[in-house]
Length: 282
Ligand SMILES: Nc1nc2c(ncn2[C@@H]2O[C@H](COP(=O)(O)OP(=O)(O)OP(=O)(O)O)[C@@H](O)[C@H]2O)c(=O)[nH]1
Ligand SMILES: [Mg+2]
Image 1 (cartoon, rainbow, N blue to C red):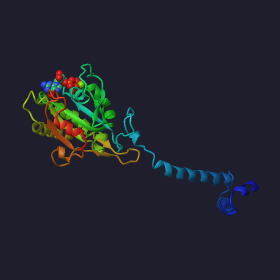
Image 2 (image 1 turned 60 degrees about the vertical axis):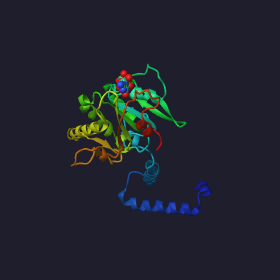
Image 3 (image 1 turned 45 degrees about the vertical axis):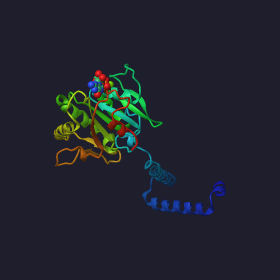
Image 4 (image 1 turned 180 degrees about the vertical axis):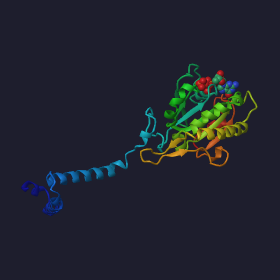
């Protein structure tokens, strides 16, 4: 006690003693098999744990836990953290790698169609990372990992095969649109109808067909909805594409979705204008 008095002000010691006596009096009638000191220590421990978790628990970012365990960034599912990459998506042969090479200004032919290609677009001296994801179905399970790194998405469509593949296009697009990191972070998307040098089908045809197909998909996929938000905090909610009760329209999405058409394989050294204005700062 003498040592304690050296370091702790007398008034504090007095208050502690009074509190101890008070608790002792309360516990006395119960004849507990443990000394009052233990009960006091347990109460102090509990109180400290509550205070510490209130201070640090609130600010610790648990968003990462609701995302894919393979995710390389903490900007998962419900997180608001922005990715920094332009992600190129679309079915096989839609022109992603052709565009990728044009944007990173390389003309190599050895780029992969079975694994992800990464490079940088020189955006007025600032590097914009680009991720080119092959359209092969085996890439689908890895999509959330890359979508969580997206600051913007270009979805390429092979206009020459679109009529035959419109259902598959819509299914692929649906999975991207309901991905929590795309939906929650409102990642802007350019849907580029490519290879218009070979066909007359245009962006407005593609848009209306996709809206019809996505409307159909909503009916079937709605029974197993994707979830957004923070599971740990109990604030998860279903992701429903568009407005309930009205037919699906891209305008009803939280994301800014733009349609454009052209050919990424033109003689031009730059990518088509709608792509350039999409990726350059507005
Ligand atoms: N005519 C024409 N051909 C194109 C155009 N864009 C791409 N191609 C051709 O389409 C084929 C496929 O292009 P890629 O860029 O490899 O397609 P991808 O989307 O990367 O395909 P995956 O990696 O398999 O998913 C290549 O032969 C390209 O030369 C275009 O605008 N016009
Ligand atoms: Mg490719």
